[in-house]
Length: 446
Image (tube, rainbow, N blue to C red; front, side):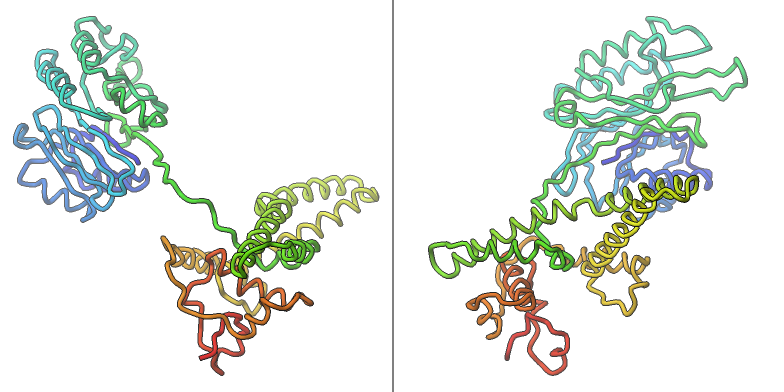
C-alpha cells in the first residue's frame, strides 16, 4: 500500500509527465497527492488523461485557480471520498476495495508566509475533532518544525516553528518513521549558496500508529523537481490459510516412501469404511509431510548451498590436484547436485502439467510461464461438490492389500487427491479410446 505526496513544481512540460508516470509505476503508488501542479483548470482534464484511465482525480480549483493540489488514485484498487476541500488542503477517506486498509487522508500544501498559513493550522485542528480512526497527513507544509530543518540561509527562529508545533500537538499528530533523504527541498544554489530544508513531512494520529505501526515514509531523490517525493509504504498482510499438502512424484522414489505409506495404512481404526479411509489418509499425509520437510524442503536453497560447496571444493582442488579427500568430496557433491536438480525439474514439470519431449527443455522461460499460468487458473475459494465416481478398478484397489508400488500409485492418486482436495471435476474425463493411452487413474466408465 504505497501512498505518495510530491511537490512537482509544475506539470505542463510533457517530459515531466513522462517522469511522473514512470515514478508512479516504478514505486507502485496507488494514491498520490501532486502539489503545485501549475496546470490551469481548463487544461487539467487533458493532462490527467495522459496518466491513463486507471486513475481518478480530485482537485481544489474552487479554492485555487492554479490547481495547488491534485489527488489521484487507482480506482480499481481503492476509493477516495473527499470530505473537505480548502486552499491549503484536501481531506477525505481512503478505502481499499479488499477491505484490508482504510484511513482518513489529508494532502497539504501550505502557503508561503507565516500569516497565510494560519488557516491551514486551524483547519487541521478542526479536522482532528471530526475524525475517528486512523489519520494520515502528508505534503509540503512550507514550514520547518525543528531548528535542524534548514542548513545555510537564515537561522530557524521560534516564530517560524511555533504555529506548526502548536498545531501538531493540538491535533495529536506524530511524525511517521522515515528513511532516505533528510532534507526535502533545495534552492539548487551552487556551493555554499545552496539552501536545504525539511518542509515536506508525513504525520499520523494515535490510531494510525496503533493500526499501521509498520508504516514508514521514504524520502526519495527529487528528480526534475526541487522537492523530494515522499512515499508512505505499508505492507498489507493478507490472511491466508495454510498451504495444502501437495504430493510430488519424486517423493515416491525415496527409499522410505513405501515404508511410511504401508505403516500408516495398516493402522487399525474403528468406525465406518469412509471414516477409516479418511483417518488412514490423514496418517499417510502426516508421514509424507514429515518426509518432505526432512528431505526436500527448501529445495532451491539446498541447491544453492550445494553449488557453493562444490565451487569451494573445486577451487581447493585447483591448488592441490592430488588430495583424495577433496576428490571424494567433489564426487559426492556433484552426485548430490545432480540428484536435487532432477528433483527440482520433476517438481517444475508437475506444476506446469506439460510433458516435455526432452529433459533439456526444462527451466526455460516458457516453462515458468506455463507454471505461473496454471497456478493462477487453480485459484479457487472452495470446492462444494465433485460430480464423479471412482472406477471399478479403484474401488477394488481400496479393498485389496497393497502388493506393488504400481497399485500404490493408483491408490494414492485416486484417493489421496480426494482427501486433500487436489482433484476437481475438470480432471475427471470419460473413459474413451482417445484418452485411454494417457493412463489417467481418474477415468470413469460411462
